[in-house]
Image 1 (cartoon, one colour):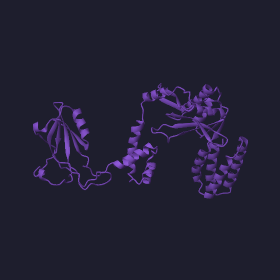
Image 2 (tube, helix red, strand yellow):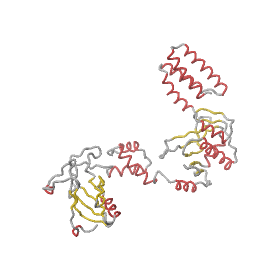
Image 3 (cartoon, helix red, strand yellow):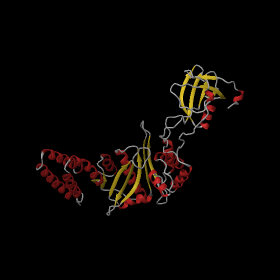
Image 4 (cartoon, helix red, strand yellow):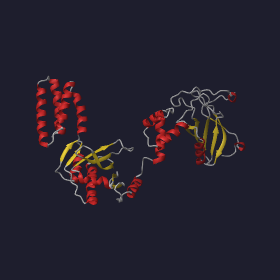
Length: 414
C-alpha cells in the first residue's frame, strides 16, 4: 500500500446526508443509529484487486457488510467485527464504529482504501472467542492421547480441573484438529481411486489390511464399492457356515453406509470378515461384498466358501445379493435385535401394558426354537393362542391384537 501522506485526500459520501460537525471531537463511541451515514476518506491505494483482498485478509477483524455498484465503480463496505448486535450470545454495551471501504475504480485497476476516521474502541465489549491458550494446550494433549469425542474430552478437562469451554467451541476446535491431523474428510473421485489402487495388492503379512474395489463410471453418477479386509479375517471363513451382514451410518462423515460382514461361533461371538463402503445398499452392492469374500477365500485359502445360513434384517437386497453370490438354497434367519426393536414399536398400538408384555414374552420364547420345524409349529401355536385372546376381548383390543399378530407373522415368519 502506498504512503498515505502523498495521496490526495478525497471524500466519499454515502447516499444519505450526515452531519460531520463536531464529529471528530466525539469522546465516546455511540451505538450506530439506523439510517445514519458516514463520510469516508482515502487513506491508501492498491495496484490491483488481489493486492487489496490480500490486505483485508491479513488485517483481519473486518466483516463485509454491503456492496454497492456506483458510477465510479464498485464499493465494498467493511465494519469492525465488534460492530454487531451480539457476540457469542452476549449483547455488547457499545459497538465499535470503525469502518473501511474498498473502492474498485471503474476506469483503472487501482483499488482505493477509505476509512470513516473512527478509531477502534472495544472497551466493555465481549471479546472471548474460542478456547483459551490453556484450554487449547490441554485439548491438544487429550486429542493426541486418543480421546477425540467432544463429551469425553469435556470429562477429561473436568478431571484435570481445567475450565470447560462451550461445547460448540470445543466441537469447532476438535474439527480443526482432525482436519490438521487427518486432512480433509472428503476426497475427490480421483484421489479415492488412487488411494485404493495403492492398497489393492494383497500383502504377505496376515494382519496388514488391503483393499478390493470397484469404480464404475459407466453411468452419470459413478458407483463406488470398496472392501477392506486382511488375510487373517478372510481365513475365518474356513470355520463359518453362516454369514451376518448389516449396514451402519454411525462410522462415517459423508453419509455413505459402512457394511459389516462376518459370522458367529457357537458361543454367539461375532467374527468380522471385512468392512465395506458403498454409495447405497442395493442387491448389486451386497453381491459385490459376498462375491469378493468368496473369491478371496478361494484365492488365499483354496477354499470353496459356500455358507448355508444368512442372518440379516428383512431387506430383500441382502438376501438377493447373497443368493447371487452363493446359491438359492440357504436358510434366511431374521436378526433378532431388529425383530425385537421393530415389534416394540408395533406393540405400542396395544394399549394394555399387560397384553404387550405377554406378547413380547411369547415372541422371545419363539426364537429359542432349535430347528425350522419346531419354530414353524411354535409359530402356529402362538398365532392360535393370540387369536383366542383376541376373540375373548372387546372389538378395539381384538383389532389391536390382530394388527400386531398379522405384522409379526407376515414380516418375520412367512
